[in-house]
Each structure stands twice: as C-alpha cells, then as structure tokens.
Image (cartoon, rainbow, N blue to C red):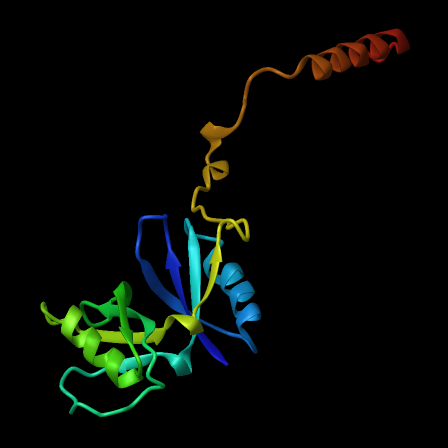
Length: 175
C-alpha cells in the first residue's frame, strides 16, 4: 500500500507533500515516514495518508451527486500552485461525501486558480509529532569543517602522559 507523506517544518508551518512510503498499515507508514522523510530536514510533524483515499479535485468536472452517510466529516485540502510544485495543506472543509468535499474545496480554495487540489478525510491521516519521536531534523554538517574542531594544545592528561613517556625513554637511554 502506498502512503503519501506530508511534512511540517515548524509548529506554525503548513504540511507540505514530500513523497510517499510503501507500508502495509498506518503504523508502519508512520515509522517509515520518520526514517525516510523526518531525518534530514527540520521536522515538527508528519502526516501520512493512504494514496487510495486522496482524491484529485477537478474544478472543471461536472458536479456529481453523491450522498454520504449524512454526518459531515472534516477533510484536509492540499493545493499545488504551479505544475511540479508541492501540494501544501491550505485548510479544511466539512462534507458528508467525497463529492461534497470536492465542491467545498473548489468553493473555498480556487479563487486564484491553483494548478491542483487534493482532498482527504482527516480520519485517514496518521500523524507523528516531535512528542512521539525524535526527528533527525538537521542539515547541519558543521563537523565536516576544520574550523569546528578544537585545535588547542593537548589536554593536561595527554600532556602529562607525553612528558612521562619522554622521561621513561631518557631513563632507558633511548634519547
């Protein structure tokens, strides 16, 4: 099963699509997403959603009548502003069916003509936060730069050991 992954960089940032993971269930998808998408870039939280539950919204399609179970449910809406760009969480809508969610998303989020919209019911989204796991979250590789290393003279213990070694060599007549 394919799960789409959305990454939130900081608590006030939007969730942005960052590819997918293959996993048999939600818990494994959450674990794989942490390993694959939460270890390199700064990450506050990740969402995973089954690809089959994400609906591509077509604003030009004919309106379909689809009745839900009557109760409105929250749906997450993601928009892609330009071709090749990432889908970003732009808000939520409440609807009783997929068709209702599509229409609500079109009404709420297409004023400036986005390239693409996705909707997915919140009940299908699994979330991993920094409270649940410790994300790697950094591209800081300062250890690669020589100026970050301590090049001060040797520690006292090393210096004392070296002087003891020299004294022992003198006593043996090696120096």
